[in-house]
Image 1 (cartoon, rainbow, N blue to C red):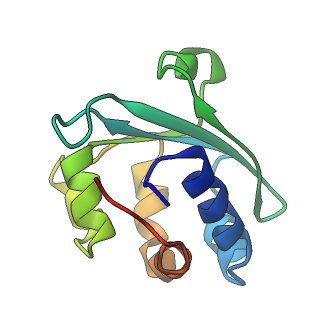
Image 2: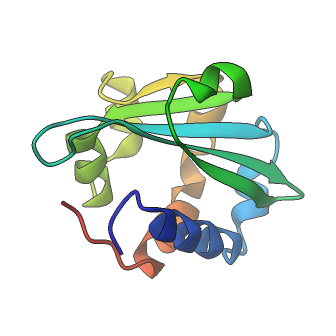
Length: 136
């Protein structure tokens, strides 16, 4: 499945919700979050944004946004933003925490709370490993 497509996000949400440690990883975090993958031509020609809401330790709702400006109305608790090249490197194993600390990944929201949950990175890694991903 092509990274960033509706089908890919749907599969990733299902894989995350199947992870037994997801509830623990989400405990104490805000309810909503968004991920913005910024344009990085030619491989990633336009910015893509997705929004999600967690409830009861699961991702309850999500949306692929038509325009990242929708985030102004949704006001998520967290916005995680990075150029496609950085996201691609993280998907291939680069350290996401180090990328955030170095400024390659920008986080709006409680960064300290996210860093305190770095030990739960395996939940995300396992979900990503379960989803067939085609990178441009």
